[in-house]
Image 1 (cartoon, each protein chain N blue to C red):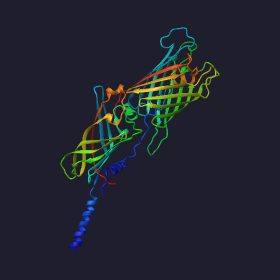
Image 2: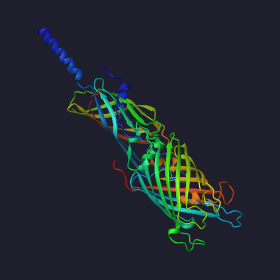
Image 3: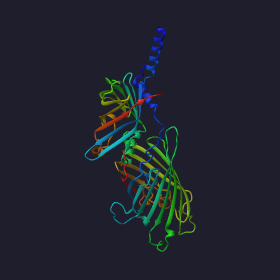
Image 4: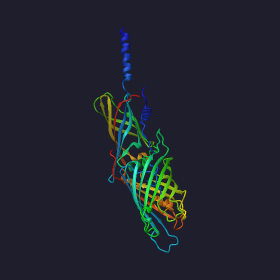
Length: 182
Length: 280
Protein backbone atom coordinates (compact mmCIF):
# COMPACT_ATOMS: atom_id res chain seq x y z
CA UNK A 1 0.00 0.00 0.00
CA UNK A 2 2.78 2.39 0.92
CA UNK A 3 4.57 1.51 -2.32
CA UNK A 4 1.46 2.41 -4.32
CA UNK A 5 1.16 5.57 -2.25
CA UNK A 6 4.74 6.56 -3.12
CA UNK A 7 4.09 5.76 -6.78
CA UNK A 8 0.97 7.96 -6.83
CA UNK A 9 2.93 10.70 -5.05
CA UNK A 10 5.71 10.50 -7.66
CA UNK A 11 3.20 10.44 -10.51
CA UNK A 12 1.44 13.56 -9.19
CA UNK A 13 4.82 15.25 -8.82
CA UNK A 14 5.70 14.29 -12.37
CA UNK A 15 2.41 15.70 -13.69
CA UNK A 16 2.92 18.82 -11.59
CA UNK A 17 6.38 19.35 -12.96
CA UNK A 18 4.97 18.99 -16.47
CA UNK A 19 2.42 21.70 -15.71
CA UNK A 20 5.01 24.04 -14.29
CA UNK A 21 5.39 26.76 -16.96
CA UNK A 22 8.57 26.37 -18.93
CA UNK A 23 7.97 29.13 -21.43
CA UNK A 24 7.06 32.76 -20.97
CA UNK A 25 5.84 35.19 -23.61
CA UNK A 26 5.90 38.99 -23.98
CA UNK A 27 3.36 40.15 -26.56
CA UNK A 28 3.79 43.88 -26.19
CA UNK A 29 7.49 44.17 -25.77
CA UNK A 30 8.95 47.63 -26.29
CA UNK A 31 11.99 48.38 -28.39
CA UNK A 32 13.09 51.98 -28.93
CA UNK A 33 15.97 53.40 -30.86
CA UNK A 34 17.61 56.79 -30.81
CA UNK A 35 19.87 58.52 -33.26
CA UNK A 36 21.61 61.51 -31.71
CA UNK A 37 23.47 63.95 -33.93
CA UNK A 38 24.16 67.65 -33.56
CA UNK A 39 21.85 68.25 -36.54
CA UNK A 40 18.85 66.22 -35.46
CA UNK A 41 17.56 63.69 -32.95
CA UNK A 42 15.52 60.81 -34.29
CA UNK A 43 13.54 58.51 -32.05
CA UNK A 44 11.27 55.58 -32.79
CA UNK A 45 9.38 53.09 -30.68
CA UNK A 46 7.85 49.69 -31.33
CA UNK A 47 5.28 48.53 -28.74
CA UNK A 48 4.36 45.28 -30.45
CA UNK A 49 7.53 43.24 -30.14
CA UNK A 50 7.08 39.53 -29.49
CA UNK A 51 9.41 37.44 -27.35
CA UNK A 52 9.45 34.01 -25.74
CA UNK A 53 11.88 32.77 -23.09
CA UNK A 54 12.26 29.12 -22.26
CA UNK A 55 13.43 28.79 -18.65
CA UNK A 56 14.29 25.11 -19.03
CA UNK A 57 17.34 26.01 -21.12
CA UNK A 58 17.36 29.84 -20.76
CA UNK A 59 16.81 30.41 -24.44
CA UNK A 60 15.24 33.60 -25.72
CA UNK A 61 13.71 34.53 -29.07
CA UNK A 62 12.52 37.98 -30.18
CA UNK A 63 10.72 39.02 -33.35
CA UNK A 64 9.41 42.41 -34.47
CA UNK A 65 7.86 43.99 -37.53
CA UNK A 66 9.93 46.93 -38.74
CA UNK A 67 6.85 48.81 -39.95
CA UNK A 68 5.49 48.77 -36.38
CA UNK A 69 8.05 51.37 -35.32
CA UNK A 70 6.32 54.69 -34.62
CA UNK A 71 8.10 57.95 -35.38
CA UNK A 72 7.17 61.47 -34.30
CA UNK A 73 7.18 62.56 -37.94
CA UNK A 74 5.23 60.52 -40.47
CA UNK A 75 7.69 61.24 -43.26
CA UNK A 76 10.49 59.72 -41.18
CA UNK A 77 8.38 56.59 -40.81
CA UNK A 78 7.96 56.47 -44.57
CA UNK A 79 11.65 56.94 -45.28
CA UNK A 80 12.69 54.45 -42.60
CA UNK A 81 10.55 51.76 -44.19
CA UNK A 82 10.95 52.62 -47.87
CA UNK A 83 14.53 53.81 -48.16
CA UNK A 84 16.59 52.62 -45.21
CA UNK A 85 15.25 49.40 -43.67
CA UNK A 86 13.35 48.44 -46.83
CA UNK A 87 10.63 46.72 -44.85
CA UNK A 88 8.94 45.46 -48.03
CA UNK A 89 11.96 43.22 -48.57
CA UNK A 90 12.97 42.65 -44.95
CA UNK A 91 9.80 42.96 -42.86
CA UNK A 92 11.18 41.56 -39.60
CA UNK A 93 14.08 41.89 -37.24
CA UNK A 94 14.76 38.86 -35.05
CA UNK A 95 17.00 37.84 -32.20
CA UNK A 96 17.75 34.41 -30.81
CA UNK A 97 20.07 33.60 -27.99
CA UNK A 98 20.74 32.32 -24.49
CA UNK A 99 20.62 34.17 -21.18
CA UNK A 100 23.90 33.14 -19.60
CA UNK A 101 23.69 31.91 -15.98
CA UNK A 102 20.05 32.90 -15.65
CA UNK A 103 18.39 31.48 -12.52
CA UNK A 104 14.63 31.40 -13.17
CA UNK A 105 13.85 30.76 -9.53
CA UNK A 106 15.80 33.66 -8.04
CA UNK A 107 13.54 36.44 -6.78
CA UNK A 108 16.26 39.06 -6.59
CA UNK A 109 17.16 41.30 -9.53
CA UNK A 110 19.72 39.62 -11.77
CA UNK A 111 22.02 41.29 -14.26
CA UNK A 112 22.92 38.85 -17.00
CA UNK A 113 24.42 38.72 -20.47
CA UNK A 114 22.31 37.51 -23.38
CA UNK A 115 24.51 35.95 -26.04
CA UNK A 116 22.86 35.59 -29.39
CA UNK A 117 22.33 36.50 -33.01
CA UNK A 118 20.56 39.66 -34.14
CA UNK A 119 19.17 39.64 -37.68
CA UNK A 120 18.16 42.87 -39.44
CA UNK A 121 17.72 43.06 -43.21
CA UNK A 122 18.71 39.36 -43.41
CA UNK A 123 22.14 40.24 -42.02
CA UNK A 124 23.03 38.38 -38.84
CA UNK A 125 25.39 39.67 -36.18
CA UNK A 126 26.63 37.92 -33.05
CA UNK A 127 25.90 40.21 -30.14
CA UNK A 128 26.10 40.25 -26.34
CA UNK A 129 23.46 42.29 -24.58
CA UNK A 130 23.44 43.11 -20.88
CA UNK A 131 20.00 42.83 -19.32
CA UNK A 132 18.40 43.38 -15.94
CA UNK A 133 15.99 40.59 -15.04
CA UNK A 134 13.27 41.04 -12.43
CA UNK A 135 11.16 38.16 -11.21
CA UNK A 136 7.77 39.35 -10.02
CA UNK A 137 5.66 36.46 -8.72
CA UNK A 138 7.05 34.09 -11.31
CA UNK A 139 6.72 36.52 -14.22
CA UNK A 140 9.84 38.09 -15.66
CA UNK A 141 10.70 41.60 -16.77
CA UNK A 142 13.78 42.08 -18.94
CA UNK A 143 15.15 45.56 -19.57
CA UNK A 144 18.35 46.91 -21.03
CA UNK A 145 20.03 48.88 -23.72
CA UNK A 146 22.75 48.34 -26.27
CA UNK A 147 24.24 49.95 -29.34
CA UNK A 148 24.06 49.06 -32.99
CA UNK A 149 26.35 50.13 -35.82
CA UNK A 150 24.31 51.23 -38.84
CA UNK A 151 27.00 50.07 -41.26
CA UNK A 152 26.83 46.49 -39.96
CA UNK A 153 23.42 46.04 -41.55
CA UNK A 154 24.23 47.49 -44.96
CA UNK A 155 21.87 50.43 -44.52
CA UNK A 156 22.68 52.93 -47.23
CA UNK A 157 22.70 56.55 -46.14
CA UNK A 158 23.25 59.15 -48.86
CA UNK A 159 26.09 61.58 -48.06
CA UNK A 160 23.69 64.55 -47.95
CA UNK A 161 21.78 63.13 -44.98
CA UNK A 162 24.81 61.59 -43.26
CA UNK A 163 25.10 64.48 -40.74
CA UNK A 164 21.53 63.82 -39.62
CA UNK A 165 21.78 60.10 -38.92
CA UNK A 166 24.06 58.76 -36.21
CA UNK A 167 26.55 56.03 -37.12
CA UNK A 168 25.79 54.27 -33.85
CA UNK A 169 22.16 53.83 -32.84
CA UNK A 170 21.24 53.53 -29.14
CA UNK A 171 18.63 50.89 -28.61
CA UNK A 172 16.64 50.09 -25.47
CA UNK A 173 14.12 47.38 -24.67
CA UNK A 174 11.61 46.29 -22.07
CA UNK A 175 9.81 42.94 -22.13
CA UNK A 176 7.20 41.84 -19.61
CA UNK A 177 6.66 38.10 -19.75
CA UNK A 178 3.73 35.98 -18.69
CA UNK A 179 3.48 32.20 -18.67
CA UNK A 180 2.89 30.96 -22.20
CA UNK A 181 -0.04 28.64 -22.78
CA UNK A 182 -0.36 27.30 -26.26
CA UNK B 1 12.18 17.88 -24.30
CA UNK B 2 13.46 21.35 -24.95
CA UNK B 3 13.13 23.42 -28.06
CA UNK B 4 16.21 24.91 -29.59
CA UNK B 5 16.38 28.63 -30.20
CA UNK B 6 15.44 28.30 -33.86
CA UNK B 7 12.21 26.52 -32.96
CA UNK B 8 11.58 29.14 -30.31
CA UNK B 9 11.84 31.81 -33.00
CA UNK B 10 9.31 29.93 -35.10
CA UNK B 11 7.02 29.77 -32.08
CA UNK B 12 7.34 33.55 -31.66
CA UNK B 13 6.51 34.18 -35.31
CA UNK B 14 3.27 32.21 -34.90
CA UNK B 15 2.16 34.66 -32.23
CA UNK B 16 1.84 37.71 -34.48
CA UNK B 17 -1.64 39.22 -34.10
CA UNK B 18 -3.65 40.10 -37.19
CA UNK B 19 -2.60 43.70 -37.70
CA UNK B 20 -3.44 45.22 -41.10
CA UNK B 21 -0.32 45.42 -43.26
CA UNK B 22 -0.77 48.28 -45.70
CA UNK B 23 1.49 48.97 -48.64
CA UNK B 24 3.55 52.07 -47.93
CA UNK B 25 4.91 54.60 -50.41
CA UNK B 26 3.09 53.51 -53.57
CA UNK B 27 4.24 56.88 -54.90
CA UNK B 28 6.53 59.39 -53.26
CA UNK B 29 4.58 62.58 -53.67
CA UNK B 30 0.95 63.62 -53.79
CA UNK B 31 1.58 64.06 -57.52
CA UNK B 32 3.16 61.34 -59.67
CA UNK B 33 4.73 63.83 -62.11
CA UNK B 34 2.08 66.28 -63.31
CA UNK B 35 -1.14 64.70 -62.04
CA UNK B 36 -2.44 63.59 -58.67
CA UNK B 37 -1.34 60.31 -57.08
CA UNK B 38 -3.26 58.23 -54.53
CA UNK B 39 -0.91 59.45 -51.81
CA UNK B 40 -2.19 61.69 -49.06
CA UNK B 41 -0.33 63.48 -46.33
CA UNK B 42 -0.83 62.22 -42.79
CA UNK B 43 -2.70 64.10 -40.07
CA UNK B 44 -1.09 67.37 -39.09
CA UNK B 45 1.36 67.40 -41.99
CA UNK B 46 1.65 70.57 -44.04
CA UNK B 47 3.15 70.36 -47.49
CA UNK B 48 4.35 73.48 -49.26
CA UNK B 49 4.97 73.19 -52.96
CA UNK B 50 6.52 75.39 -55.62
CA UNK B 51 5.86 74.00 -59.09
CA UNK B 52 7.45 75.51 -62.17
CA UNK B 53 7.18 74.99 -65.91
CA UNK B 54 9.63 76.53 -68.36
CA UNK B 55 9.33 76.65 -72.12
CA UNK B 56 10.58 78.60 -75.11
CA UNK B 57 8.60 80.44 -77.73
CA UNK B 58 8.97 79.17 -81.30
CA UNK B 59 11.10 81.40 -83.51
CA UNK B 60 11.67 83.81 -80.65
CA UNK B 61 13.86 86.78 -81.58
CA UNK B 62 14.29 87.72 -77.93
CA UNK B 63 17.14 86.80 -75.57
CA UNK B 64 15.46 85.39 -72.47
CA UNK B 65 17.28 84.28 -69.37
CA UNK B 66 16.99 80.45 -69.06
CA UNK B 67 13.63 80.21 -70.84
CA UNK B 68 11.18 82.46 -72.65
CA UNK B 69 8.18 81.57 -70.55
CA UNK B 70 7.63 80.49 -66.98
CA UNK B 71 4.51 79.28 -65.30
CA UNK B 72 4.71 78.93 -61.55
CA UNK B 73 2.40 77.45 -58.98
CA UNK B 74 2.47 77.93 -55.23
CA UNK B 75 0.35 75.51 -53.27
CA UNK B 76 -0.17 73.95 -49.90
CA UNK B 77 -1.71 70.70 -48.77
CA UNK B 78 -2.64 69.85 -45.22
CA UNK B 79 -3.65 66.53 -43.68
CA UNK B 80 -6.90 67.00 -41.75
CA UNK B 81 -6.75 63.31 -40.90
CA UNK B 82 -4.65 60.41 -42.16
CA UNK B 83 -7.25 59.92 -44.91
CA UNK B 84 -8.27 63.47 -45.83
CA UNK B 85 -6.04 66.17 -47.26
CA UNK B 86 -7.16 69.66 -48.24
CA UNK B 87 -5.20 71.99 -50.46
CA UNK B 88 -5.18 75.28 -52.28
CA UNK B 89 -2.94 76.87 -54.83
CA UNK B 90 -2.34 79.73 -57.21
CA UNK B 91 -0.91 79.31 -60.67
CA UNK B 92 0.51 82.17 -62.69
CA UNK B 93 -0.58 80.79 -66.08
CA UNK B 94 -4.06 82.28 -66.61
CA UNK B 95 -3.96 83.30 -62.92
CA UNK B 96 -5.79 80.23 -61.76
CA UNK B 97 -6.70 79.84 -58.09
CA UNK B 98 -7.89 76.44 -56.97
CA UNK B 99 -8.96 74.50 -53.91
CA UNK B 100 -8.91 70.74 -53.69
CA UNK B 101 -9.42 67.79 -51.43
CA UNK B 102 -8.34 64.20 -51.60
CA UNK B 103 -9.80 61.33 -49.63
CA UNK B 104 -8.18 57.93 -49.16
CA UNK B 105 -10.98 55.44 -49.75
CA UNK B 106 -9.03 52.16 -49.75
CA UNK B 107 -5.46 51.16 -49.09
CA UNK B 108 -3.70 48.19 -50.63
CA UNK B 109 -3.16 45.49 -48.01
CA UNK B 110 -0.82 42.52 -48.02
CA UNK B 111 -1.99 40.62 -44.91
CA UNK B 112 -4.58 37.82 -44.84
CA UNK B 113 -7.43 40.22 -45.69
CA UNK B 114 -5.82 41.23 -48.93
CA UNK B 115 -6.89 44.40 -50.70
CA UNK B 116 -5.33 44.55 -54.17
CA UNK B 117 -5.78 48.27 -54.83
CA UNK B 118 -5.39 51.67 -53.27
CA UNK B 119 -8.17 54.07 -54.19
CA UNK B 120 -8.34 57.81 -53.51
CA UNK B 121 -10.97 60.33 -54.53
CA UNK B 122 -9.86 63.75 -55.69
CA UNK B 123 -11.96 66.86 -56.22
CA UNK B 124 -10.70 70.18 -57.47
CA UNK B 125 -12.44 73.51 -58.11
CA UNK B 126 -10.54 76.14 -60.05
CA UNK B 127 -11.15 79.82 -60.76
CA UNK B 128 -9.58 81.37 -63.86
CA UNK B 129 -8.64 84.92 -62.88
CA UNK B 130 -7.12 86.01 -66.20
CA UNK B 131 -8.76 89.34 -67.23
CA UNK B 132 -7.00 89.80 -70.57
CA UNK B 133 -9.07 89.62 -73.79
CA UNK B 134 -11.34 87.79 -74.47
CA UNK B 135 -11.80 87.01 -70.76
CA UNK B 136 -12.25 90.58 -69.55
CA UNK B 137 -15.98 90.67 -68.93
CA UNK B 138 -17.05 87.12 -68.13
CA UNK B 139 -18.58 86.68 -64.68
CA UNK B 140 -17.36 84.73 -61.66
CA UNK B 141 -19.54 81.71 -62.39
CA UNK B 142 -18.12 81.42 -65.90
CA UNK B 143 -14.57 81.24 -64.67
CA UNK B 144 -14.97 77.97 -62.79
CA UNK B 145 -14.01 74.40 -63.63
CA UNK B 146 -14.42 71.27 -61.55
CA UNK B 147 -12.29 68.15 -61.78
CA UNK B 148 -13.30 64.86 -60.15
CA UNK B 149 -10.94 61.91 -60.19
CA UNK B 150 -10.98 58.34 -58.96
CA UNK B 151 -7.34 57.43 -58.45
CA UNK B 152 -6.73 53.69 -58.54
CA UNK B 153 -3.25 52.34 -57.92
CA UNK B 154 -1.47 49.06 -57.40
CA UNK B 155 2.03 48.60 -56.04
CA UNK B 156 3.36 45.59 -57.92
CA UNK B 157 6.77 45.36 -56.30
CA UNK B 158 8.64 47.57 -53.83
CA UNK B 159 9.97 49.35 -56.89
CA UNK B 160 7.10 49.44 -59.34
CA UNK B 161 3.65 51.05 -59.03
CA UNK B 162 0.96 51.89 -61.58
CA UNK B 163 -2.07 54.12 -61.41
CA UNK B 164 -5.18 54.56 -63.53
CA UNK B 165 -7.20 57.73 -62.99
CA UNK B 166 -10.70 58.01 -64.49
CA UNK B 167 -11.44 61.73 -64.61
CA UNK B 168 -14.54 63.89 -65.09
CA UNK B 169 -14.15 67.60 -65.76
CA UNK B 170 -16.93 70.17 -65.88
CA UNK B 171 -16.17 73.60 -67.32
CA UNK B 172 -18.78 76.24 -66.63
CA UNK B 173 -18.12 78.30 -69.75
CA UNK B 174 -16.86 77.99 -73.31
CA UNK B 175 -16.19 80.74 -75.84
CA UNK B 176 -17.17 78.38 -78.58
CA UNK B 177 -20.49 76.54 -78.59
CA UNK B 178 -19.07 73.46 -80.31
CA UNK B 179 -16.99 72.69 -77.23
CA UNK B 180 -18.51 70.30 -74.73
CA UNK B 181 -18.62 71.52 -71.15
CA UNK B 182 -18.36 68.04 -69.63
CA UNK B 183 -15.28 65.99 -70.42
CA UNK B 184 -14.21 62.46 -69.68
CA UNK B 185 -10.56 61.57 -69.46
CA UNK B 186 -8.38 58.85 -68.07
CA UNK B 187 -4.87 59.18 -66.72
CA UNK B 188 -2.16 56.54 -66.64
CA UNK B 189 0.83 56.92 -64.39
CA UNK B 190 3.71 54.84 -63.16
CA UNK B 191 6.72 54.93 -60.96
CA UNK B 192 9.88 52.85 -60.99
CA UNK B 193 12.43 53.20 -58.20
CA UNK B 194 15.96 53.12 -59.51
CA UNK B 195 17.62 53.80 -56.15
CA UNK B 196 16.51 54.19 -52.55
CA UNK B 197 15.88 57.90 -52.97
CA UNK B 198 15.42 58.21 -56.71
CA UNK B 199 12.56 57.08 -58.92
CA UNK B 200 11.48 57.51 -62.53
CA UNK B 201 7.91 58.54 -63.24
CA UNK B 202 5.72 58.83 -66.29
CA UNK B 203 2.17 59.96 -66.90
CA UNK B 204 -0.25 60.32 -69.77
CA UNK B 205 -3.78 61.68 -69.89
CA UNK B 206 -6.19 60.60 -72.61
CA UNK B 207 -9.27 62.79 -73.17
CA UNK B 208 -12.28 60.96 -74.63
CA UNK B 209 -14.10 64.11 -75.78
CA UNK B 210 -11.59 66.92 -76.13
CA UNK B 211 -12.26 70.52 -77.12
CA UNK B 212 -13.48 70.80 -80.71
CA UNK B 213 -12.77 74.45 -81.43
CA UNK B 214 -9.02 73.95 -81.30
CA UNK B 215 -6.46 71.17 -81.30
CA UNK B 216 -5.36 69.84 -77.94
CA UNK B 217 -3.08 66.97 -77.06
CA UNK B 218 -2.89 64.47 -74.25
CA UNK B 219 -0.66 65.66 -71.44
CA UNK B 220 2.45 63.52 -71.18
CA UNK B 221 5.40 63.60 -68.84
CA UNK B 222 8.47 61.62 -67.97
CA UNK B 223 10.32 62.62 -64.88
CA UNK B 224 12.61 61.92 -61.99
CA UNK B 225 11.77 62.16 -58.31
CA UNK B 226 14.47 62.69 -55.74
CA UNK B 227 13.66 62.84 -52.06
CA UNK B 228 15.98 63.89 -49.31
CA UNK B 229 14.69 64.29 -45.76
CA UNK B 230 11.75 66.71 -45.87
CA UNK B 231 12.30 67.86 -49.43
CA UNK B 232 10.97 66.15 -52.52
CA UNK B 233 12.26 67.37 -55.86
CA UNK B 234 10.46 66.38 -59.04
CA UNK B 235 11.82 67.07 -62.51
CA UNK B 236 9.81 66.51 -65.66
CA UNK B 237 9.99 66.72 -69.38
CA UNK B 238 6.44 67.33 -70.53
CA UNK B 239 4.16 69.11 -72.96
CA UNK B 240 1.88 70.44 -70.20
CA UNK B 241 2.25 74.05 -69.14
CA UNK B 242 -0.60 74.26 -66.67
CA UNK B 243 -0.41 72.60 -63.28
CA UNK B 244 -4.13 72.70 -62.54
CA UNK B 245 -5.99 69.52 -63.44
CA UNK B 246 -8.59 70.96 -65.82
CA UNK B 247 -5.88 73.07 -67.43
CA UNK B 248 -3.31 70.44 -68.34
CA UNK B 249 -5.74 67.60 -68.98
CA UNK B 250 -7.99 69.52 -71.38
CA UNK B 251 -6.01 72.48 -72.67
CA UNK B 252 -2.53 71.33 -73.55
CA UNK B 253 -2.17 72.99 -76.99
CA UNK B 254 0.98 71.19 -78.10
CA UNK B 255 2.22 67.65 -78.45
CA UNK B 256 5.23 66.20 -76.68
CA UNK B 257 8.44 66.76 -78.61
CA UNK B 258 11.64 68.73 -78.22
CA UNK B 259 10.67 71.64 -80.49
CA UNK B 260 10.67 75.14 -79.06
CA UNK B 261 7.18 76.01 -77.92
CA UNK B 262 6.30 72.38 -77.31
CA UNK B 263 8.98 71.18 -74.96
CA UNK B 264 8.27 72.09 -71.34
CA UNK B 265 10.69 71.52 -68.50
CA UNK B 266 9.08 71.06 -65.10
CA UNK B 267 10.58 71.44 -61.68
CA UNK B 268 8.65 70.89 -58.46
CA UNK B 269 10.07 71.55 -55.00
CA UNK B 270 7.91 70.16 -52.23
CA UNK B 271 8.66 70.76 -48.59
CA UNK B 272 6.99 68.90 -45.74
CA UNK B 273 6.40 70.29 -42.25
CA UNK B 274 5.03 68.19 -39.39
CA UNK B 275 2.79 70.59 -37.48
CA UNK B 276 1.41 67.81 -35.32
CA UNK B 277 3.88 65.15 -34.23
CA UNK B 278 2.98 61.70 -32.99
CA UNK B 279 3.44 60.86 -29.33
CA UNK B 280 5.83 57.97 -28.78
